[in-house]
Image (cartoon, rainbow, N blue to C red; front, side):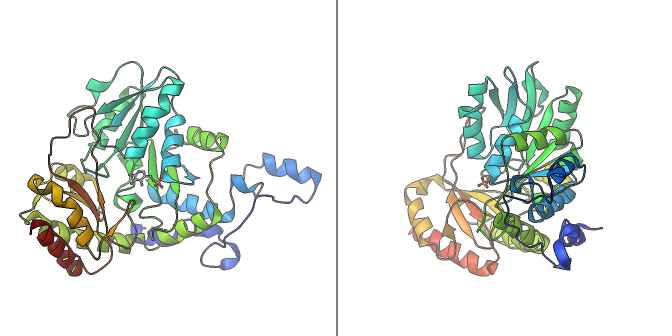
Length: 382
Ligand SMILES: *Cc1c(COP(=O)(O)O)cnc(C)c1O
């Protein structure tokens, strides 16, 4: 089955009473029919309702759908993307370990690594996202590599198959934050990663109204993910699970439109005199283009621009003049957004001097979006 067919069907087999979407089961307590049934359900190898935290048909539907789309042996669900990231890292590290993290990683992932991991004697080393070889960062304590490709603020691509091959030879786990592509456009597990993480908050939910995270894992990595998520009491609320599974059904059509519009807007911005550079891997002159074209089935609607450094003082006017782009964090909904990026770098300095603005191109008419940007850039220049 092709992706477009799978996103319609995935996870729905267990939905109750032949209703198209799974009902929202609200449950903490589940009543047992007898004393003996407690133990029967506890010991059962099958999925059975036992207690809300361990899952309901609503959450199973979402977990099964994401596991299938990511090609994982299983999928654990979380209340946010960040909870998914933190738990996935904790599943594999112990005191004395070092983890390698891309220098262009999502800001909150960096804060978790820098502020929490030292408490358990785990060291984080940041590697340049475009590093020629990952091996030069290996030492005997290297336990895990955290890849985010493209980086969600500055869009550097990483060669995941090459990283995974080097890691596998040393027994190092590879975790990929796959939020930009969603499992429709890229499947990290098929390219050698052990774990694929989604901030489902973004494209999977797709309507900017719920937070959710997922971790899909290979057969080998799944037991550690399942156990760690369970030990930490990680679970997702029923409404969030419902909204995320509903979002999946339209993921492919939404992404196709996000890409089409984002390409039009990006190409227009590329030619604008106040735009120094457009950071978007599907553009032919983007440094990561070859990797993107080789491994990805398409692009989502998130990219960044570097504005002419001579206009840095007038950037607020650009933001405040936009009428169709909201100023807001997050992305992946149907609406267009701008947000200032703040590239933090410790492996190699960030060299561009101009202001970096991240744009999410929503489902509005792209020509309206271009007019809006045109107007705001003109006011910035005036
Ligand atoms: C938003 C985001 C996250 C975190 O997701 P939340 O649901 O907001 O916690 C993680 N990684 C990337 C790439 C993101 O864009």
